[in-house]
Length: 433
Ligand code: KE4
Image (cartoon, rainbow, N blue to C red; front, side, top):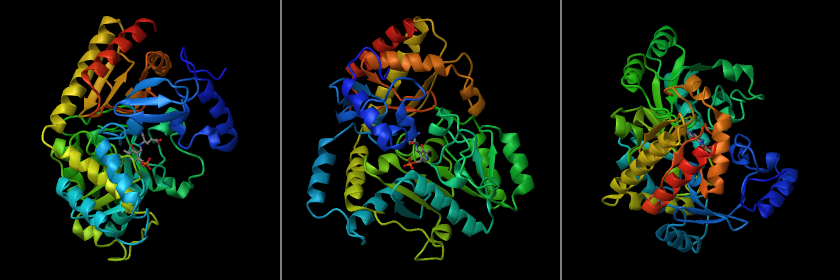
């Protein structure tokens, strides 16, 4: 029975049946299929502010926000008007525009660890390109990633990956040649001893370490005190490029990302999501000596038909200009704190064992009775219970990420009333689990 819960989902179900005949799994990105939470995905008709509306006319408070990008809320009028004006001047030229210069100026000001930045079309492109640059710069081949981190679906990065890969229990995907996988060392997050041993012993072969400084792809896992600092010391000492994948944490844990929040200066940074304001933009950048290797300045090839697309640049520029306004992050912090306190209180009152983690405007509530600090502790959570909670919250009009192994997000558009309604819905849902 293709059914999502108490609310009418007739049209969504019909569309999902048709979509599955046309598109693998009926979706264009696996985690959207609701496989981890049961039921069928909602097909969305529109969204505005903190709300999303499905094709059956059901309204939800949205905590997915397109997996992070919609930090202002959906269809912000200033962003919409700017996009409308931009499309009237053409949508793509395959040539440089002033808009790329404007967004690059904004980004380099907010991420001073980067001397130069290159725009691409997704986080996947950003991370795979950053790794290519790091390998060229160090003339070494191996990379280190951490269990549970997801850096997009480039071949060498799909080992013990998070996000949909963990949700669907295919963390190391078929189709990746063994030779690619052999060049990727996958280590436990937050384990300083292991990273120290591996870098000390193998640094002559290791080009870079790439990580999510806060892991948003197994929920929300924070770095333990000293972990990032030690990682920075070791990579600096042994000529290993430190790449912060801030596709999710960028603009989310702080305006200047995790590197601002934790005061760590990586050698390279990858950005995405918020930087495009809901349109396809990824970016990678770093120290001048590394970025000068990128074609056409240097020999490392990377290209893209729609890179720096003027409409996408416009959405990113307008979004960041609003984020730069006085008091925006205070407002976001107040909303996020109210949600955190409310959900912790609701689950305590309802008698459930949960653990809540947050970094800025990204969060996760785990159904478990122990601390979550890495991939294995995240996997020990009760995903079946989370699935029931997710569906009950949908019935209450709250749209959470359809997986225990995803982060939730808040926006500037979420109101006190939205938080109150969400907390009430959580208490009622957990009570009836
Ligand atoms: P994209 O290629 O999906 O734009 O970015 C890949 C990526 C890279 N790095 C980090 C830290 C990321 O979180 C992502 C993508 N995040 C997932 C959400 N967990 C995107 C949602 C999806 O795959 O549908």
